[in-house]
Length: 97
Image (tube, rainbow, N blue to C red; front, side):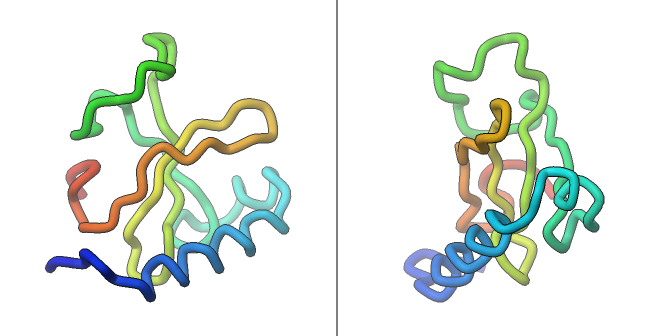
């Protein structure tokens, strides 16, 4: 399924970010992964090249769901800041599900 140009995906993604920003990390950690929770994805399972700032000591990225259809976005948490690295617009482009 091709999602290129799916404006609603990005609209819902922004809504999801807004909702996530109102939660504490403890609330996020205890939430179901397909809701507002997370899961870890080993960096060796990521298909695209990792940015240079992902150093060898980083073993996992954090996966969030971008909207209700389970397409994810992945990033790295540094203290209380989450850095988005990948947004999977087309299901399966970033890692195999």
